[in-house]
Image: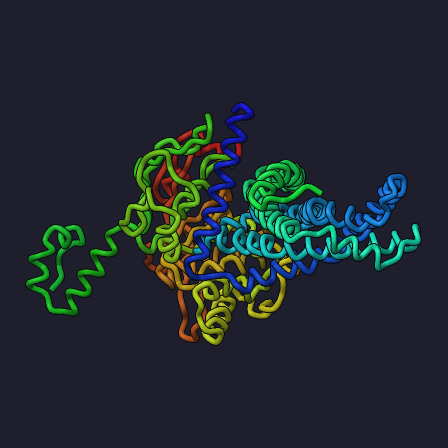
Length: 256
Length: 301
């Protein structure tokens, strides 16, 4: 099978998986408890790493750009620089990459182990559809929680930027905050929250697909976990470009 | 009165109905139902890529009968029972459960069929994240049965496999034999009339393997369950073909050897070789077979 055929086949399988999971939402039984549990694991569980990532990313943005802004005499715009890049791009993408590493790998490894130990077969034999019981709650939880995580990363990124600007570069908090407020538009916030919805779907569907298509015992579990993280990270980054372009057109985002 | 054989009953169904009293009629319907095999394979083929796994196999499992499927590893034994559950689909041929052709059933239609069938997996396939109680209760929880009824049923099933003490344990706290027994209890919830065993004794010590076989014998003789017992261990065959379960006056279950009393042990062998059925029959015919492959299988050389 050549690469193109393999790509098309995987795309078809992932599309079918997403369809099966979402069609199942309209029939009973609905796994509400399972979905809430996954939201807790994915959302609350990922909060510390996302906050840390956002905080230090905001900090390093100021660290690197402040001297440049001083050179152009635009140090008063430091908040605008960090808020624009964080809310439009770095917040959604970095949160998605962190969640892909933490949750994508966990989902893939868990489902993969269930496949190799015949638990998925047992589930089907006991009359449960694994797409509804396992895939749908994880997809919903990711799609629902990733925007919140992104907002957390954005907020803590701005706090990190503010602390670095005031402590290392003696900038007044008020000036920084005013610049942040001046830099953010409603369109930025909307696009920053729409993106993670898609990223959540990408991470969840790739991780579930890779996990459920595991073959070859425990070695296979390792293989599918690695490929789930690598593939979902790459797809997130590539998709981000096209999504940004589309959102720019749709929301009519003005240049900075 | 009903003096006809079951086959005649089917062909003369209308006449019989006119002549029979209601109670006789119920008996007659029961007899007709018993003629329809619990499981039937008709010329089933299956291949993965270039490898042929099943090459036109046909066999039937009658009601209350245990079919022991023997064969070397990779001979298509486990595949056969995965087909019955619709976990795989054949390339051609027909598979019938209770006379119903399930070959082309969708996943949703199969969900209904699976309610009639219990499956015991090779390593138990217990859900790691659930306790023994929740594993056994799985099917009932999915059906939304009240917790009180669930507990009664779970305890009844765990008593059947003699593991009521382990009810609150997690699967990783159980030994290999206990995991299989919990797997059996989980498969028996809802009293399925068909039970499939996929190498349930693989890797177990002889006494534990014997316990598993005793459970299969109890199901066959006391619960009238039709089953398929996939194995490559001849010791299992010996137990299943030579012993039967009886309940004594104290309500205890005893296992007696064939020949002690007159009895017909409802167990037959299906031997698979490279995806084909090369033998079907009773154990004595099996051991007496002059087929070289069977001889090698029995004697190991």
